Structures are given as C-alpha cells and as structure tokens.
Image (tube, rainbow, N blue to C red):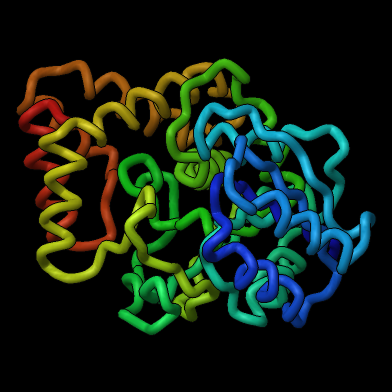
Length: 306
C-alpha cells in the first residue's frame, strides 16, 4: 500500500527534523512525503530541502501552501491533482511518529474494500518540548459513528490515515467553504457516508506540547474544564458546527439515508428553542464519548451554544 504523507509546515524549524527522522524509521517503507509550506520565514524550507536531497526527488515533494491557515493548507494537499496513492496521512510538523504508525494504518485500510471510505486514527502520547513523556490522550470506547462525529471529534488529525474513497469525499467540499478543523470534517464525512472508522487505543504519535501549539493536550480535570469553557461558553463549538452544517447541506448525497435524517434533524434542532432542541438531540442519539462530555453538551444545547 502506497501512502502519501501530507505534511503542513509553517515556521517549524525547531522540531521538524525529528518528525522527518521518524518518517524515515517507519516499518512501512512505501510512502512519499508531500510538504506544503505556508510561508515560513525560518529554516523550515532548508530542512525539508535537505531531507529531499537525502531521500530523493521521487520520495519528497515540496509545494507552496495557500497561506490561509493550517486547515486550508492540509486540504490544499488533499486537492493536489498530482497526488496519487492508496492511503493519505495528515502530519503535523512538530510530532514524532511511532515506527509502526503507517504499518498499523495500512493493515486496517487493507482490510476495507477500496470503494468504502476508511479512516484510521489513534490515541496519542503527549510529550513536552524536549520529547519527554507527559501522558496519554483518552482511550475512547464508544463507537466512532456519525452521531458522535456530529458533536465531537475523537480523530486527531496528526494520527489520521485514510483511503482514496475517503479522499474522494473531501474533494467534494466546496473550495470556498470555511473550515477551521480539517480533521473533524474528515471524521464527519467518512462516518456520515457509512465508511469505517478505526480508533486504535495504542498511540501512534508522540504529540509535542509547546507554547506555539494551536491545539494542545486535553487531559486532567482542569484541562477538560478549560476545553469545555472555550468550546461552549466562548462559542467555538457553535461556530464549528455552523461550518460543518453549511458543508453537509451541500453534500447531502454522500450521507447514508439514516445519517441524512440524523443530520437534517440536527440542523433543524439547532434553530429551535432550548427545550425542544434538547429533546430532538436526545431523540436522534447524538453523543460524546464521556459522561461529563455529554452533560456539558446538553447544557450547551440549553444555552444555544450548539
């Protein structure tokens, strides 16, 4: 299975080399690297050019990004017409991959018929800026299905590997659509289309935590409280839902009949008054992975933060 690694970079020089080294150590060696740089002013380009010289021009490809944020950068890679592979792996610039990450992902993707959208994702190991272990992300146990994907992203982008059928769904997104989280919309579309999502409880990535992180770790009670505060009280969650609803309204044809009903009820309920909104959400069975997360979701629904 040939896998294209989609690496978005922007001023990532301090940590990039360790990530590139982890690609080289992969036990699954049939990969190519597609790097889209979003206008770095540090040594990021020099580091990637040296890696290209080392690995070969047929192994590493360098592209100029759209300079519209990290999500647009990743999706521009997905849309690149020269990109041809069996699987596609999002990659951040400051992580370190486990040596068997691509091997495990490839084994799952190979088990799914090629016409069925498939998405591999996993837990992560949190490490500090010096690559010292801090903790593990949550081990989710509930099914990774569309009613979960609508209101929670359990599929961290830096762990994702998906097949060509899943990429075909992403290619149908309106190029002018506003998307802040490329990984969440990937999870939504694959699950919504009736694809298979595999959440691996064994971590596949060492997820580095440092001051420049756009989205960091979410472990511990304080971190969970802060995350819920930012999601619901500060309006992030409703803004992201608005983006996803807008995209899905233009892509109803990719949803299974059952998931289309769930989505249409979800979109309609968002516009109703608080009590009726909660009743419909409960009726269509949307859920988050934890008890606390579900409580927070329904409180947010009462306050029109969904």
